[in-house]
Image (cartoon, rainbow, N blue to C red; front, side):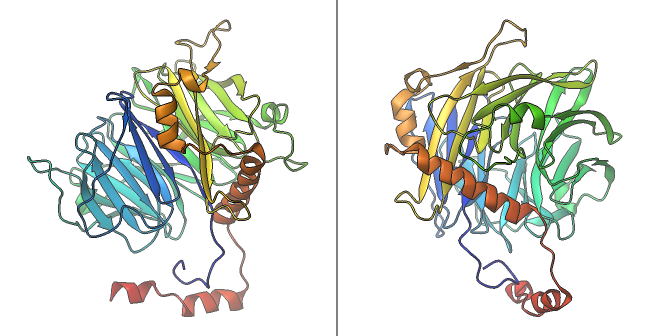
Length: 425
């Protein structure tokens, strides 16, 4: 049960993917299962956790590599945040939270891990390793900022490390100045980026020499991607993707498909932005012109022959590959309660009209069949299951991120039955 709620229906969770900044490894989370493949050694990774707690006992909701690639962080519905060393694949830190975790971020210097809970509080914990690279004792996290009762959907540090940006389901993006000691809390708000008309689902930064702090891009349930100046909160450009997605939607979904943006990531060429869109069997690529401060739709890459609607995207800073995963955990009514499918797209170095992205075959993906068996399992799953998974995820996302309206009596009942105070005792 979530705090203050009656017994809830089983919540499905999307499969997630994260890529090492130098593409040395790839991680996929499906339900409570964290799967990692070492591309350098061309072998599956065996994670080691010497703590008394399990790896994860409920759905993982966030995975993230640090900027240097030395850390991998996982967190989710079991209220645990796990910090893994990518040198030893040992869990070097485990943090117990009071509420379920919705998003994570690692500071650019790798010294701090931030995570957000579903009550709207962002917490910070030190991630320093000891010299022997041994497991650290469990640490207490400190609150750094809060959105006050609004689920935080995404956390990002700016490229220069000056700001931490947080987005929520109430359409807001907050830019906060990172203090010298984050454990003391962040009390200086730089600005808010306001303009979305639905929940903000994802954030990322465009790196530009002219903007050391980067240009912020945000995706939303309102079917737009927006470009922001994080120092002033100014909206620089808006790209409406609904009409383009409408022409490419997957057959078999509802008559009025949803074009909410579920994930986005900037690509290695520095100016391309990849989007995962609900109902779109493939990805959409946008072009950002940092000098003109504009966004434009470049291409739609459809995945033929499969019902693959990506749930998560990942890319390295050095390689021209975009990784994607579709999948779900706790899918009811099928033999496969948790499933995943991984694909990769080779992206051109520039966005010229003659340059075309290429969808790689399974045997062309780095790691090949061994990687796929580790990250998605060896079971062959039919398109009808993935189609049902896409619909289930869409329903779950709406339930989570679109605020419920309660009667006065229901609100009073929820207040009386809250048990979060009990957990603190």
